[in-house]
Length: 168
Image (cartoon, rainbow, N blue to C red; front, side, top):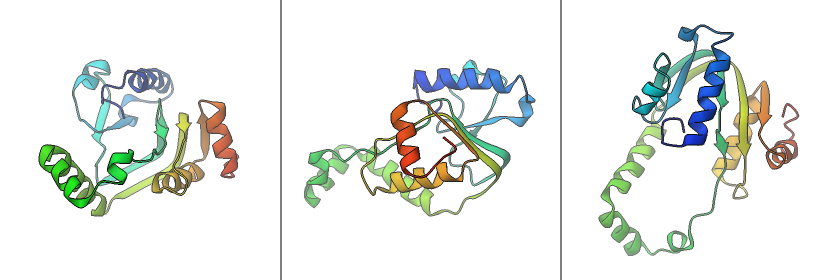
């Protein structure tokens, strides 16, 4: 996620931004970020940033790029097999984690009205996935909807091809 202190993603974003500015006007480009502002404003002072949780977005092109990773990992053994009292104790020890979880669940229930004429993914990594996970299904659905997909490694290409995505 851009702006989350992930240097690799942020570096790829600055490169993508400099390339986009060669062919587009600055007002035609905006970035979705989990944390609005912060050091990203200093990194790209003229760029426009939108909160990742935005309810209404409309654009000609939705571009996932610059390090976006589509993956899922199994839960750690301790979390998969924790008893209900153990999970409650974990929430008491880390109340902020509980509140973030609840906020994400509520946010997921709120309808989003996004409209994009085209979709593309550039320089993305795909996998690994927990077989049959929601992340795998969502990633496959999103990448299948793209007009153009450029992956960053042979394993990602193999996953896309196994899904029948021939645009990769």
